[in-house]
Amino acid sequence: MGWREGLCGGALWVMLAGSLAGCVEESEPEPAAEAPSEEVGACGVDAEAVAVVTKLRFAREEPQGVSVGLDLDGIDSDNRDARGCFQEDMVDAQGNTGIDNQFARLMPSIEAVGGEAIEGLVQGAINSGELLIIVKMAHVDDLEEDSCVDVSLMHGEGSPEVGTRGLIESGQTFDVDHEVPTATIEGVAIEGGVISAGLFEFQLPIQIFEFELELTIRKATARFEIAEDGSLSGFISGAILVQEIVDLSKQVEMGGGEVARLVPVVVKANADLAPNEEGECQEISVAMVFEATPAFLFED
Image 1 (cartoon, rainbow, N blue to C red):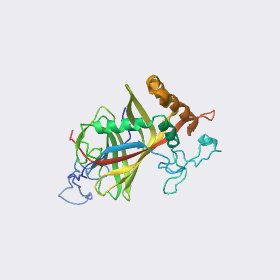
Image 2: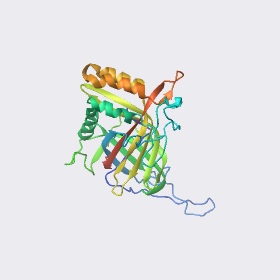
Image 3: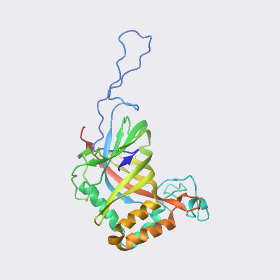
Image 4: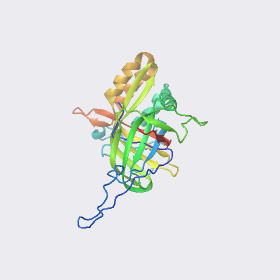
């Protein structure tokens, strides 16, 4: 119930003292080359950067037909294409086509019947420490251009301090919640201060009324930009099983009112990924926008 194949982040970007042993040919006489330090990983020295997510929300269609996200199925489909269940793909702000984020088109309907409360609950869980998402980059040589870093997504533990802007303040230290699996993607490149890491599964625990639910974003990729101060901004793009949304809605139907009854209907009608033999799509594409501020992790 956590991250599988993920990410992590930090308050000040910390260059830990990892030593690099030089390479010596076999024919070279004494002194023999020193064995590499245990702090030297597959990607290089053990220098890391850590950040904690401070904001997380569903990406909208802004303006119509435009959204952040990725091409998840390799198809630039329109409303005549059965491969995308006749759902039209979007473009992003850079003009890339085939962007899959069908959930964005549902948000106005969901919000119209009170669904905006869900994002408020997510933000409240972040600020209270119930939903601490840590992004960690290990073996970092250069935050602008680096051919090989390891990116991890993990859940944290702690009671964060929240500033006057209503967001977790920078520079705090958290524990790692080892009961939740950490997702790590090795050998990721930083290009122009931007990282794209995937694929992984992202569990988003939310509480609606007295119900504690968990939404899983599958086949997810995280893409984010690293600012000079170590803060991150970007999005997670992936898919949600339609049946999972139906099952979750049934759990809250008695107390969830119109939202719980509306969501399964509109999700089924707008699903755009993984069509079955009958041509019915089993997944709906989604993107979530996030921001993260530099943080630290307590040593184990």
